Image (cartoon, rainbow, N blue to C red; front, side, top):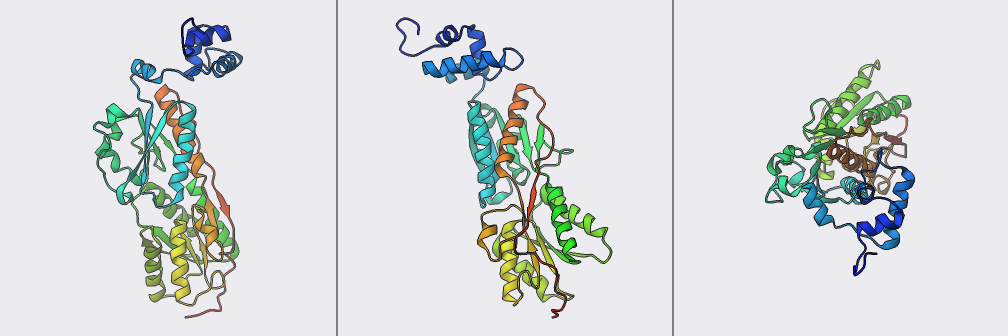
Length: 341
C-alpha cells in the first residue's frame, strides 16, 4: 500500500500483481479480453481482493461520461415472470458494476411519466419489453442505447433484440394437442397489441391449418383471471360444438378458463384440455396442474443485459432465441367426444 494511504489504490494493486496500472484498469473495468491474458486478469483480480481494493466508481464514471445505470422497462408487475427478468438482468449488471432501475409501465400499456428529470442524462441504456414499448416515448428511452425484449427483430426500435423462442413453444403445444387427437381448439388470446402475442396467434393458426379436420376459434381477453373467465363463458354460451382443447396465451388466462369451464360443469381434462404459457407458480397451484410452456425469465433478463453491455462496448450481441420447453401435466388428455351440449 502507498505510504500514508488509508485505502489501497490501483497502483498498489498493480505492484502486488506485477503489472501496469493500465492493465489493472482494463481488468477491473472488464475491458481486458484481447488485451491481457486470462492468467494476468485473474492475478489482478486476486490482488485487488487480497488488498480489499474498491475502484472509485464516481471518478471513473465522470471520466467515461457514464452513470452505470440501466433502466428496465416492463409491463405492470402482475406476474412473477418480469420479476425473474429483473433478477437475471440485475445479476449480470452487478457483475459489471452496473445498477438496474425497474420501471413498470402503468396498466402494462401506454406512456408513463418520466422517472428522471432527463433520462438521457441519468441513464446509460434501456432494456424494454415490447409489451411496454409505448412508455419509451415518454422517457425518451428510444434515444438511448436500447435493447428490446420480445420484439420483432425486423422492426425493432432497439440496437439489439432478445427473444424467447415463443414460436417453437406454440408449435410444441399444438403438436402435443394434435397428437392426443384434438381437432376443435379454442385459442384464448391475450388482448394486448404486442409482437409476442401476434407470433402465438400466427404459429397456432399456421400449424392447425396443415391438419385436415382441425378447427380453430379465437376469443380475446385481457390478461386477468376474471377477463379470461368472461371470455370463455361467452364462447361456451354461444352456438356451435364445444372445443375439446383451449390454448391460452398465459397461465393467468388458463386459470380463468378453469373457472369458466367448471361453472359449466365441464371437467378438465376429461371434457376439455387446457394449456398455458409461462410456467408461473400458478401452474402447479391449480388442480389439475397445468400443461404449459416453461419460459426461463432469468435467462431472458441475463441475455438482455448482456446484449446491452455489448451495445455499449461496440460489440455484436450474441444471437439466437432462448429455448423454451413444454411441460406436460394433468390438464391435457385425449378428447372425449361422447359429451354433447
